[in-house]
Image 1 (cartoon, one colour):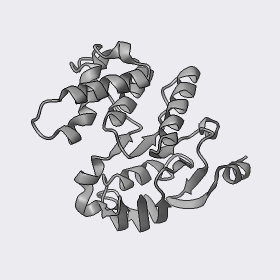
Image 2: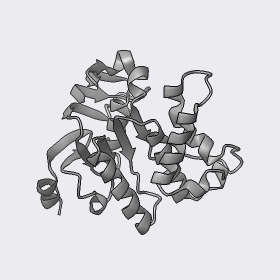
Image 3: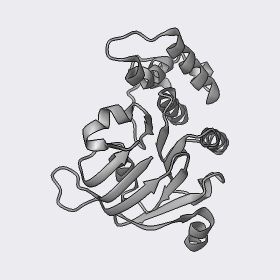
Image 4: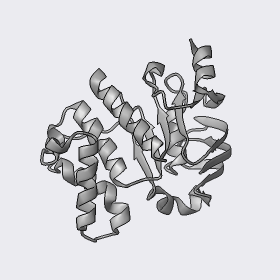
Length: 231
């Protein structure tokens, strides 16, 4: 599903690679969690897989070169970034923001179909935020906004889901609920790569963990083996 060979990523204007010597293969249906200290390169790894950054080396997703077919590939990748800011005066309603996740499937300048609206409604219901659909996005709490961003990614009906710190703005109850929902998606066959900073928040369904430090993957192993060494 995903293959990185001898990959390194350097941000524009900088000389030192943020991630380097990355070799990684992800099979269809895997659930992988990425852990490591701040600044280790976890976010950069997700952005590199998603084709959002210029990188050296070979990166293929769905068997295609991300450098050549990035736009096409991203139509089937749901990405939830770590940081997102929404001004309180932003006029879009929640349902409009979630519909944005459908744009890659709808096509440029085309109107959403009944099916698109049904997918948005179904996604909001799945995440338990249907009551927010007509609320302005700028009036949401941090936790509500986090769930909406996840909903936007899921509305795309992606084959791959990339999550960067998806629990960071959630309270304990919401963390548990979203963790269960993510595990259910994986159970249904979705390939998931998730970055977390708290190893205690890793869902039990995740069987493989990558540990990154100083831009390199220093461990790639079964969940229990990595966690045993991290404690």
